[in-house]
Image 1: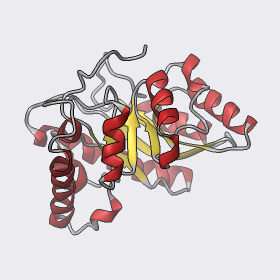
Image 2 (image 1 turned 90 degrees about the horizontal axis):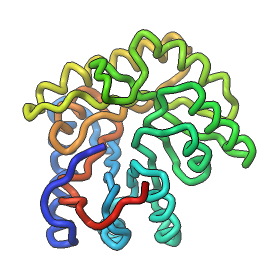
Image 3 (image 1 turned 60 degrees about the horizontal axis):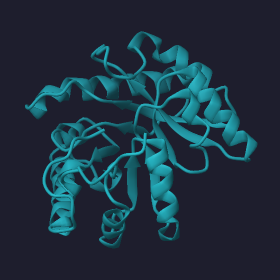
Length: 243
């Protein structure tokens, strides 16, 4: 869930990755946060496995995929490295069954049936699937996410599923060239997470928010997971993408 620019090769990868970590560190410092509390999810959709492996060699450990087939294929190809994979894309019910045991965290749950399928498949393998609820704070029809008014009801149903573990919330604000335009949405997600944790009586440690263009306000508003692809990998026009 992040656009990409630049060249799809390894040139400059180390510098770009270091620059992103530097931005996280400076943003955290401005609000007195420990930057270690912000995990960088390197968005690797449409990025060749070889380039993901290069990022791993540079110290990056968490990678985010948006397409189930592509993500599973890449995970298998790089299985020996011990990467941590997150699923961050819109998730269809017929694809959800493939995720448990393959992706450590699913960021984009916005439907009870999807959560139930994840729970059932995870339970069948003796696992618990960690997940976030995606919230559509702007009410954009073209984007996934549960409406704010339906968030508590969905969360209350998910926490009853033994094979599901609710870990927090995710948001994808409306695109704006000004990163500060995203700040109100990040603040609202933080507030929603705190309110939901109180309602449920449980910790919800994660807020997945912020991408290449707006990671600073996201970190300043409490992000624990930032999803960055463009400023790490450059262009993702790297070949065909599995459906």
